[in-house]
Length: 189
Image (cartoon, rainbow, N blue to C red):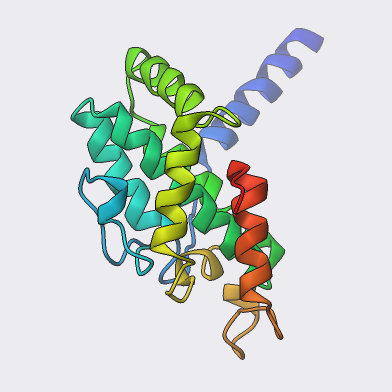
């Protein structure tokens, strides 16, 4: 009798699990790429490109097996995303960069991921000539010059707060830019 009741309960639970629907609610602009890049050299990126735009280009580079370019696009997208995390008020939105990076790598073949990782390790090795070159290129492009809607709309405040622009008040852009360069890539100025 116990077994019948247990099996019935298990069957009911499985039916309930399979009957549930997943609802995904996103705010307009969440993780949005407004100026998607192609697989380009880092020097072709402008400070009007947000990380979603740049990581789109990184994905194209991976498809084209241009891992050298992909690693450099990863670097600038990361610095820009770090800068955005300093200026976006809603802390729940700060994971946007990591979600974009994961989405970019989601469908990449394991072999290509391994080649990319090796290129990233070479390019981003602290105090390496490659890293100095990447840092110099990012500094030449300059700090982001876009409204970080992609990140703001990723957070909970996109649903809860309708007033304000989503940015930290009295934000020190120059200090945050230097901090993003030094903490994300270990760039020296």
